[in-house]
Structure formats: structure tokens, C-alpha cells
Image (cartoon, rainbow, N blue to C red; front, side, top):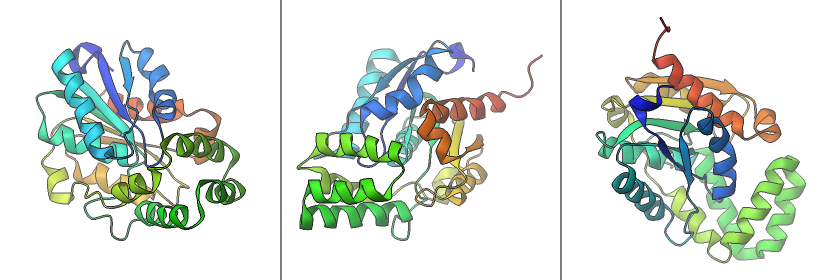
Amino acid sequence: MQQQKWSSVAVVLPGTGSDADFADRAFNAPLAQVGVQTIAVEPDPRRVVDSYREAMERAARTHGRILVGGVSIGAAVALSWAAENPDRVGAVMAALPPWTGSPRDAPAAASARFTATQLRAHGLDAVTSDMTASSPAWLADELSRSWRSQWPDLPAALDEAAGYHALDEAALARIRTPVGIAAAVDDAVHPITVAEQWAAMLPNAELSTLELREIGADPGVLGRACLAALDRLRGPRP
């Protein structure tokens, strides 16, 4: 990755119901290895998308051209902001893309809507207990922490994310900014087909794949995978 070409500062955005702690661990170490400072954004659960957009805007005003990225809904918001601000973004790191265009039939949106409904009906402790029993240990630990930090506004945050309209295929085709995509081949919530669609439609994108167990062992695999995809866009080194 050519730091002088893209940026020395990256703003990274968490996924639905997640937090800055996970986003930081996903991107900070890989970016630090190439001389890029990471700003991991803590979502405001009362206004998730606006809090993400404001964080990118602040960073761009302060630092000039920035890198933007995120996980799941964070990746979708980062890519949308990059599309609106092509001269202010050096590259995009999109980990676990959730959907293209409308969220209506997306598994990630359905999961968020269901969880919001359950939280309103049964409360945080009961739903967290059910989630812990049915999720890999690493994911249960992550969500138990982030959900509690966003309570009692968590259901509203999940509903907001589930209603977010991501860029459609026509909009993706107009983006010239380099995009490095990371996706898990075994992730039913963030299907690999969405990442493949983004990679196919974006004119300047590459896709790296991994497995969920790798994220559980080290979230930094997401950042490394995005950077590896961006690195391939540079072509062979002389």
C-alpha cells in the first residue's frame, strides 16, 4: 500500500450493533504496519448513519484526504460517503459487505430487524443469553459487550441499520476510488455473493476471502484482507 498516494489517516466504522473496539482491532494493527493512523468511530445508537458520516467529515476537514472503511453496514456507509466525496477519499476498505441497494431481502437486515423485535419484547439480558447460546464464543463476547454499551437505544440502532439503502449496481459502477473488499466464504449473514457483486460492479476493486474462524482468532484479518485487495490493485511491483 502506498501511503503517500492514499492517505495517512483512516476512519473505520463498526457493523450493526458493534462498536469502535471491534473496528479498531479489525483495522488498527494492519494499518499501523503501513504507516496509517486509525480513527475507529463509536456509533451513536440514536443516529448511527449520521454519526458515521459526521466522523468522516470531521476527519477529512482535519486531515485532508483520508481512507474510509468499515464492517457490514459500516462498509456500506463508508462506500456511500466515498462516492459523494471522491476527491477526499484515497481508498475504501469494505469488510463483510451486507447488501447492494435495498436491504429488503438481505439476511443481515432481517437479522437486525428480528433482534430489535426480540429486544423490545424480552429485554437485553434474555436476548443476549439466547444469542450467546447460539453463536460462536468470540462473536457472543463481542456482541455482549457492544449491545450493553448501546442499551437502551440498541433496538432503534438495529432498525436504522436494517433500513439503510446501500448503493445500487448503477451507483457502484460510477465509483472510481480504489476499493479493497474482504468477505468470509462461510458467512450466511453477509453472503459472499454480495461481496462478489461489489467486486464485479466497482470499476476499481479487488476481493479477498477468508473464513469466520479466522476473524474469531484475530479480527485484524479483516483489515489485512482489505489491504491485500488494495495492494493487488497497484499491480505487480517493478
